[in-house]
Figure 1 (cartoon, rainbow, N blue to C red):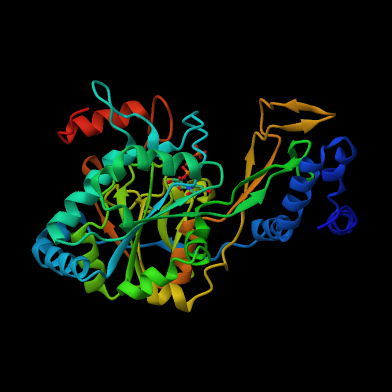
Figure 2: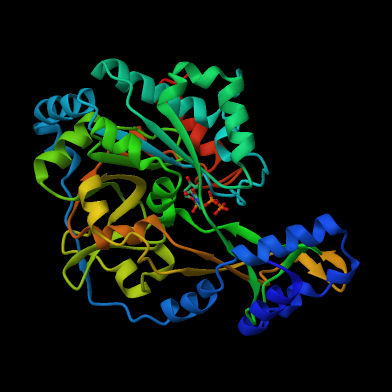
Length: 406
Ligand code: UTP
């Protein structure tokens, strides 16, 4: 793309501010800027505005298979799950493209040292679990790791430095997720440098299309992968390719499933599994009305009590039969550092929007979803913040409770 083409494109989208410093740039910087502009998906900005206005359907509570119910049939589910894993039908997808801004470290979140007396990264915690399941099943299942262009190199380097945590390197596949532009409240895309628009990871909803775009669909078809276990990087007790969960899902006939915990309080910041117009859906904590958030059944339990922990199993067949790109963009009001009047501005309050699609929105597209309750203390130790709720501190306590030496 040359300057004239970029100008025409930006004029059509009302974004000519991106060329404000063009005359000051070196030839290399001009080349970078024009290439970045060429690859921006401007339609996201309009789409996000329309998606935000979408009217929610009728929300009703959803049921879950309780941990007690699972316990009763555990042996059967476990055998079924182990067989599917041993036959290569199950693979894992780690979502590790987030920026982890709340944790306040620029390094990939998985590299964070959760150890106290010894070094123990979040990646290592999760890889230990993976190795345990693979050993039990007698099969090294594939692991796909989604990174972003901001943390891809550092993530790969960390895995390599740590000898892939003892897992066969050829079973681990990295792929990079997409980006979306960040803009001011009046929808003008910011510049991060005079020659670089602000482009940030576009949320965790694009994992399947990014995996396919990276050419990894061939691995799935070659090895007959039927189920993908998608999980987040920020839970140090995450059970990956849990045979019981896999078995329960296969037995249910549902196209997807999600692990859930009973919310500890109405205001707990987890998405809630519900139904929207009768179909399974997940409503994010900030989108649930006060009335629904606080509603209780006659026995005192929260009516909307099943909080998701970002551990889902998706049928590959079903994923291939739906439009996985048909996800709404969510507008997140964030602090976005940018160039203003030639100098870098570090805002102290949210000054603009980032645009993200979310994996939770895929549940609705899948049509049917089995919610499986898990024991919170055994499986849910989120690392979102440095201290306080869902923090490094609380995750360390939970690791100790589960007998992990840290
Ligand atoms: P979060 O929603 O907690 O976001 O991610 P985050 O970026 O990690 O953290 P904050 O909000 O900036 O503090 C939940 C999961 O989704 C992944 C994260 O890596 C984490 O595993 N994720 C999030 C992506 O893979 N890509 C994204 O664009 C966003």
